[in-house]
Image (tube, rainbow, N blue to C red; front, side, top):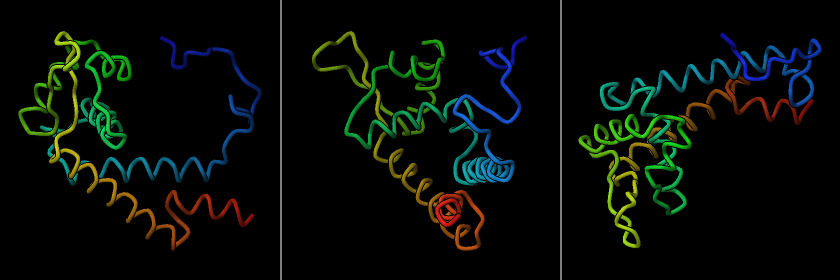
Length: 154
């Protein structure tokens, strides 16, 4: 089994983008990801929003913020999931009023998917909480937002 797609070893201390990130920065990023996961589990019922459906809802919310709706095939492409799996997740999320589907007015063969107003509300609430918590942590020089100000000062 191959862990990474690119099996070419790199020189110690380098990454694809140049220098390897500092362990402290990586540690903060890991903590940030853990805080995100914890907040998601606090805010959303895991029977509705789970690790598998979360990326789909993120894609749909990002499209919503741009005033767009996504085709089912686009969700399959961005998630890397088979169409049957995406449809199963959409069926589930639709039951809980997180997403809705409609036929494309220009092509009835195409299904457009979007977050509902309720789904958009909860995603805004979630991201508002993320920002609020990270801004508070940045005041103590911890949290992900503190990294940028620390690098600018140094």
